[in-house]
Each structure stands twice: as C-alpha cells, then as structure tokens.
Image (cartoon, rainbow, N blue to C red; front, side, top):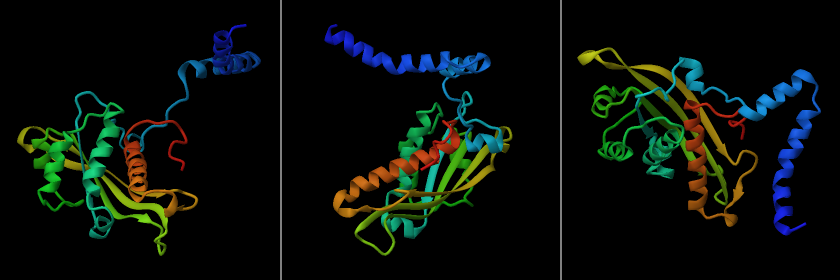
Length: 228
C-alpha cells in the first residue's frame, strides 16, 4: 500500500468512524443522527433577537456601532472606543450584518463629541443611513490583575444599548429597544505572569476576545460558545 493511499485512509477514518456509530443506532435515533450530520449542530439564537424578535441580518438594514468609556477605563487603553468599534463592526460583518463605515465613525469619535447612553444619536444615524445604533459603554477596563503589576488579567464591565429608527419622513427618530450588561474576564481561571507574554500581545488577545463576546449578542452562534 502506497504512502499516498495510507494518507487518504487516515483522513477518512474520523468520518468512517462517525458513520459506523450512526449505523449502529436503532431506528429513529439513526435518522436523527443522519440529520444532525447533514445539518450540523443547531445554532443558539442571538440574545438581542431572543429579547426583541429582531434580526440585524435583515435585508437592507444597516447598523451604526459606537462606543464610549469612563475616564478610568481610558487610562488603561486610551483608544478603547475606537478599537472596539472597529473590531466589533468587523465581526458583525463577518456574520452578514451590514455596518456603517468605521472610518467615518472613527472621525466622529475623534471629533471630541461627548457621548453616553443619554445622547440622542438620531441626527448621526440619519447622516450615516443607519437603521440601528449600538452603543457599547465601558465602566471598567483593565489588563493587569488587581494589586499585582506582575500578572496579566483582562477585566471589563460594559453596558450595551441599542436604538432602532422608527417613524416616517422627518418624524423618524431613534427608540431604545435593548439594553444588557456585559462582564468579561480573560483568562477565566488564573492570570498570566507578565514574564511569559508581551503586554501589547496580551492586550491584543483580550480586545479580540472581548469584541467577539460583544458581537455575539447580535448573531446566532453554536450552543456553549459563550462559555469561557
């Protein structure tokens, strides 16, 4: 038997084992097993969809992602709002949710406008042709374990607010339809010693994880994806 043949068989073995396991199941269980193989695991509805009955993936809908942070959170990462807007928008687009131009949003955030959960974003949403506005407001953000400069641990607490454009013509205005708190910790079980990782690399990992968690509120995902 040639090397190429052995390699092909090795690649097929997991699939063959799964087929054999399904074939050994009785009656209805075998049918269910085959259906699961064909369809894959069912997805868990987005929390936003479960609470509002709305899907951001709806055709021709456009989402404006904004972010703000408490001054204490900005001391750890001054560009936190801009980085979160860019990364969360990117992850939403990866799941077929249309977002406003992040370059335009960045220019708005850099303009010095003071924004928070009480800001009326109606004019901005109209200007950017947005149907929904997502605001991620950070209360805390840190990358060091509390009272220990030699240990890394990402910690953040934020609130997610969503408004929907409602009404017609000149009377169209934003109406708040969703609000949820979000806490994040990385790593979950124990911090990382600073000797083992560069601070910028750790911060990059934490921001990527955090953006994924925040974006996941708005698209369907596999069960258990929120764990850890």
